[in-house]
Image 1 (tube, rainbow, N blue to C red):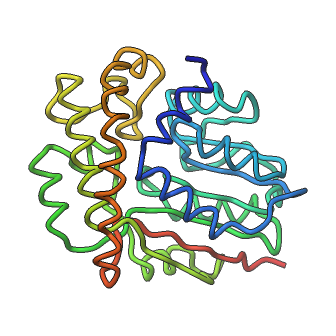
Image 2: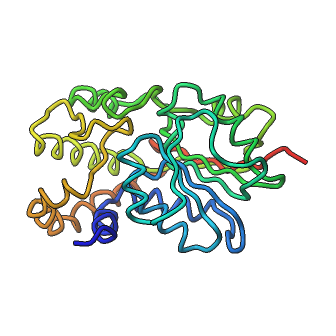
Length: 265
C-alpha cells in the first residue's frame, strides 16, 4: 500500500469523513485559479481532494504527525502552525477552509484575527467545528473514555451564536448548517472505542500522542490491515445504520459548518 493509497482507502470506509467532505463541497465556492488554504485536515485526504478541485492550495495543521501525514499525501506547501502567527503573507488567500482546528487551540480569537490578516478582500471562510448541544451521546462518550481531552479538544464545541461573536466584525456568517445526527455519531463513537481497544488502551488516547486526538497513521494501518479488511466487509451495514439519521431530520446535528465573508476592503 503506497503512501497515497491508505488515507484514501480509510476515507472510503468512513461515514464520518465522507459526510464532512460532502458538506465542505456544498459550502465551498469555485476555487479554480484562486489561492486557497486548508487547515486541520489530519491525515491529508481532504487536502488532496481540495487540490483536485483546482486552484493553488497550501495546507496547515497543529502537530508533526498530522503535518507529515498531509505532506506524504500532497507533497508540498504543508506547514505546521500553532494557532498564532502563520508563515503566510497579508491578503494571500481567496478561500480558507478550517476542517478541524478551532477547538484544538487555546486562543481561537487570535487565530481569527490571523485569518483576517492573510485573507484577501472578498475572501470566503469555511469553518467546521463540533456543535455545542446538550445530548446523551456526549455522556456515553465520557463513559467510554472519549473525553474532550482525549480528542485534543480545549473546548467542547460552538453554537452559531458563539461563532458569530468570535468572528466579530471581521467576518459575517452568510450560511450555516448542522449535520451528522445521532446514528452517524453513535457508529463513529463505537468505531473509535473499538479502535482504542485494538490498541490496548481503553482510555482512547492515540498511540502516537498527537494533539489532534484519534489520528490513524500509515504504520497503524499496516499493523491492523487484517482488521481493516474485516471492517470493510461490514462497512455496508455501517453505512446503512448511519442513513437512519434521515429519520430524525428535525434534530440538529453534532457537527456545525459555517460560511462567512470577510469584511475587508
